Structure formats: structure tokens, C-alpha cells
Length: 259
Image (cartoon, rainbow, N blue to C red):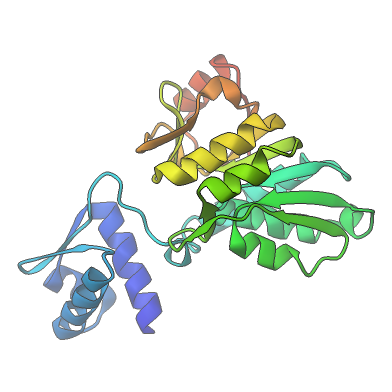
């Protein structure tokens, strides 16, 4: 197992359990305790966990894995969600895409859609995510608008007043949001308040708002609110979603698509 794969596995276990002991982690990953100790020390130096005597713990309720370590979590669900979201978008529309693993999959689904291979443009994509812009910029039929701003290394998203300046000057047909939490009472949310502020602006500039979120995000709340549920028109999630949570969201006025 490579170091990056091992670190990803450790961080996934840590998010799931909240705390890991060295011996427990070594047994799970089938490596030596000395290797795990080195991994914990190196991850703590990057502020991705908190080292404890004999193990490690997460930072707390606002703990967030960097994007590069989240890409494989619920991958098949995210790809199905992305394909369904892409099908909701019409040729010629102006689409806002926030950062995140699911919205990255949406960008990839759009890139291979047969009816978007040509046009002037086939689609206008406005995003504050550097990785999404990078993937789509090679598609000449897409007009890519990057917001500007200061790069946030955890999510590759541009944040701050420079991004605000661009978004205040445009109008979108649809905004596609990736979220870390969606709850009837607390709305859609992100870990970071500056990221949430940019996502909120995208919503305000859009005719309709689509949330792309796998079932693990539903019924949860996070630190920074993006918008209330009545701002969202459509939620696309996977079939593992709790029926009671889905029913509550539908009663709040959302159209819910499970795939």
C-alpha cells in the first residue's frame, strides 16, 4: 500500500470513528505500529489530525478532509448522482458549479455528454473550483468562467472578495451545489464560512438551485450555512437515503431524485 493510499485509509477511519489507536490502525491496515506512528506524526504536522498518547483524534466538529483524500468515498454513488444532475442541465445554459467531489463528477459527466460536443457555447460553466476549471478548459465547446479569489488548499476552491466581484456581475440558469450537510431545519452547509459565502452567492445569482449530495450528507449539519432548504429546488441523492429524511425534505418543498 502506498503512503498516499495508507494516509487516505487512516483519515477515513479517523473520520468514521473519531479516534484511532496505533495498534488498532496497524492491524486494520496490516502494517507495523512504527509505520502508523510515523504516519500519525506526519499527518499531525499537516494539521490533518491531533496526535494523542498512543493514537490520534480528529480536530472536532469542523474537521474536514482535503479533497484529494475524499475522492474515493462513496465513489459509485457520486458518479450516479453526477450523471443524473448532468441530465437536468440543458444545452446553452449558464451553470454554476461549486467545488467538491460530487460536483467534480458532475463536470466529468457533462464533458462526455453527446449533445454537448458542439455549440457556441454548448454550455457556460462558472466555477470557483480550480480542479473543475482545469478539467473542462480543454473542452473548446464549453465557455469556462473562473471566479478569481484566493485558493483554499483543502477544496481547490477560490474564496474571498475577488470571487464576490465576479459573481455579482453574472446571472446563472442553475447553480449546482456540493454540500457537506443538508438538513430541513439547518439547510445546506459547508465546513468553511468563506466557502459557504461563495456558494451562497452562486445560489443568489441562479434561477434554480440543485444540490448534489450522497445519502451520508442528509440529516446532518455543519459549521457554515449556505442557504435554507426553501432556496433549493432539486436534491439529487442515492437510493440509500433514509426515506424519512427524504420525506421531510419533500414536505419542505424540494424535488428529490434518488439514483
